[in-house]
Length: 237
Image (cartoon, rainbow, N blue to C red; front, side, top):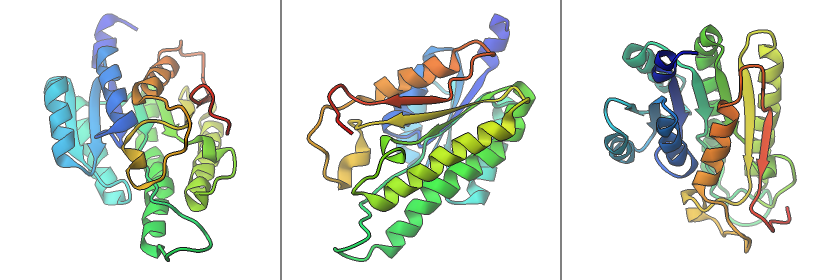
């Protein structure tokens, strides 16, 4: 790949307005990518775009729970940059999700499944045709609790779904040159925890995950880093 080719590469990130997505956008620009910043928070996206530079970053207000919103995201990306090389399906949230006890949270449950599962699936379905053209890279944010059981049961179940989704997509993409990476963070100091009780454990920083993402993306084309499970030192589960 020539220096010119590298300068044209486009890195699309959902959930880009805060936390892991925001940190990854900074690292991607540092690595030479143009970035597409997608999230529901227009103000935060535009602030990050201004920081990264209008020539390097495009901010798109997008609700990943809406197929039409994601279609528009992909169309705007192609219109602006003409291609997509890396996609990080990173949007997700939890507000607590016990199956027994406490208040009913039917609307929160529905939104969480739509964002965490349907949203990630829609991102993959809508961007894979572009990734196939460029032998690109799809990354999905899973979680440590997508490998173990968790007291945040429905959230954990959505991340188990993402684990299965990543494996299924990788199987389907065999022979296309598209790489697929599942990123499974432990406890990260990010806005994710604003409405949750944070475990009494060490914490990763969003940039720790961003560096892991860039590590996977920067490998030679014949190297497919399938999973990155990353916990802070001392986190037991």
